[in-house]
Image 1 (cartoon, helix red, strand yellow):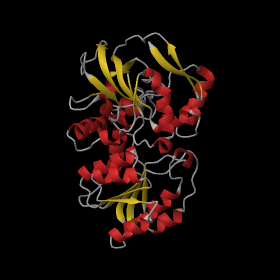
Image 2 (tube, rainbow, N blue to C red; image 1 turned 120 degrees about the vertical axis):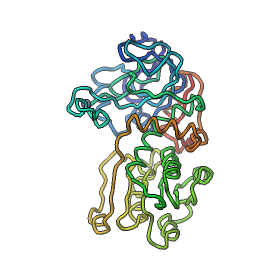
Image 3 (cartoon, rainbow, N blue to C red; image 1 turned 180 degrees about the vertical axis):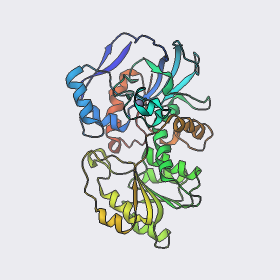
Image 4 (cartoon, rainbow, N blue to C red; image 1 turned 30 degrees about the vertical axis):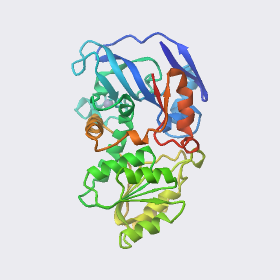
Length: 361
Ligand SMILES: [Zn+2]
């Protein structure tokens, strides 16, 4: 089969390799649509972010290596021994993080809390290839109402569901979301179906603000034209919102907001309110803890997403409560266009992309 393999950072080549053998508890699947996550796209070019050291070690020791590709939609061609939940022809998406199977958590029915297991695309081969052998425990069935392209977004949507769950929103809570990229737009739509009251979003791109309003934000503030903190305070009688999702931070080289949205989030939330830190920064960050302490702010990070979260994404997207299609800005055809998808996804600002660029196989 054709598969993309990494020889080093910034050096990916399409190789002909054997189709992996089908194993017990696994399915053989044909990849229909795959997209690099933003983290994967940055790592592909050697930009430091989450898991950078681990990927660097693998490249140094094992190259060429099949990396990345955990956000996909695939069709099952064959089921291995012991597979009970899926049949040939089913379309599936996956939860990337697998339980290890032998730690105390896995041994006591709490596999969803396990942090020791392998991750599809990181320790296990991902789906920048024509076929993949995937473990049944990681998969969910894709509803017929969803296209292959929408289904490839479900893995990232499940991380947004986990982020919203972490916020523990009460009915009527006011919410602000900094950043209306794919995760920001997803969080906005999920909070809207999860009891939120006033929803204010912030971005610096006119197009993202327009899309945010179209998908349900009450107000989308263009931070290139007005101060988002003042605007949010004005909309909440000077108090600030109950919950802020910070989805904008990260390297300005990739078109992200740097670190300033962290302090803006703290200034836009009411005292005693919550900030959900969704962004990755790729470097240590200085934060005035006393300021958070004085105002009793809760700075929380999303839990890892579970298979239940992924199942919920299928309901959310298939019922139309979360619309994925409007954020899918770049769809490329054919496995040859994988490097172009990495280039676009690593530089979304330059290409005016919102969702990662997708590849239809
Ligand atoms: Zn475990």
